Structure formats: structure tokens, C-alpha cells
Length: 238
Image (cartoon, rainbow, N blue to C red; front, side, top):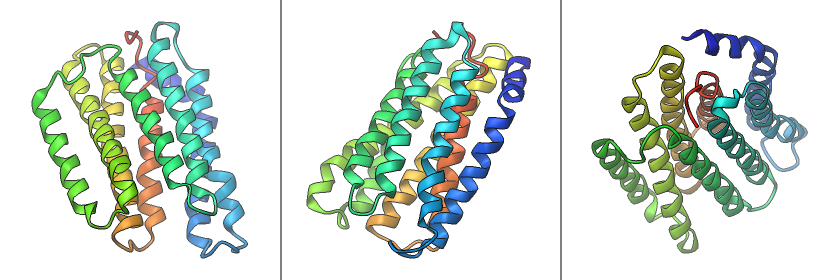
């Protein structure tokens, strides 16, 4: 890992520590809150969006002027994600509102990931992820309410495009260690995000996944941490 990335991690060490605490408590709160009237639900409500906001603050504190476009796109994505966190945890059915917020997160991340690399430069990666996205949609299709089919298709394709662009960018960039490390963080973040959202969708519409909060939120927070860390070595992204 490059020196700028190490310095950034040190500058934000206390924020990252608070993020880990909030992420763990958000997962614990979700597991402990067995129903709408559970006395533990407040813990999930308090810590779930707070964890994402802490990452947003960490990016703002450590954004280099030379990588402002990339960093601000990640900040915007995290802001939409925090709104999505809020909608998805509310009592009642706000799934579509959450879906739109996270769709905007992926659009912001795609914008960030094209600041220093061409979109869809690696056609094989994009073809692979398009296939994966279609397989995910096919597996959900019969379980989806009719009114949710088009929104889920749009979302799944945007998610696959974001993950594909993150990996394509990592393969394209061959700069110094800080930039390469940052690109690798984003590539891993894209993969974790795809895993998290796939588990969330299948857990909501098709399967009963035991302890789903561990798998869904664990991969989600890993993805967001990786995207936040990807801003620390991105000195040449404009």
C-alpha cells in the first residue's frame, strides 16, 4: 500500500474505528430485533445509517484537491446510500424508495470510476457481469411482484455495470502503488456490493436466509469501506 493511502488511513483511524463499531451494532440490532415492537430495534435504527455517514465524513476529511471529482462522486454515492439505509430500515414497505437511492449510489460510483478510465473498456468483463446480472434476474423473476420487475431489472443491470467498471478500471490502471491500491479497493468494493445486494434481493423475494443481517450488512459495509478507502490513493483521478 502506498504512503498516501497509509497516511489517509491514519488520519481517519478514529472514524474508521467508529464505523466498525456502528456496523457491528447495526448487524447486532437487526439480529436482536425480532419484530416491529422489539426493544432492540432502536439500536439498528441509530447505527445503520450512522455507519455510512461516518465513511462519508472520512472521505471529506481526506480528499486531495487533485482527486476531488472522484472523491465527491463517492461522497454523493455514500449520501444516497445513507438515504437508502434509512428507507430500507423503516417500518412499512419503502423498498422501492431504497432501491432508487441505491441506484443513484451506483450511478455516482460509475461516474467516479470513469474519471480516469474509459467506461466498458474491457468488453469481456462487461459481458461476464451482464451474464451474471441476467442470471440473478432470472433466478428472482418468478418470485418478484409484477410491479417490481422493471425496477429490479434496471437496478441489477446498473449494479452489474458498476462492479464491471470497477474491475475493468483496476485492470486498466498501471500507475504507482497508491493509485493501483486505490483501484483494487474499488474493484473489491464492487464485488462485495454485488454480493450484498444479491443476498438482499434473494432474502426478500425468494429464500429465507438464516442470519441474513450478517451476510447482507457484512458484505455491504465491507463494500462501502472499500470505496471510501479507494479515495485515499487516487491522486490522479480527475
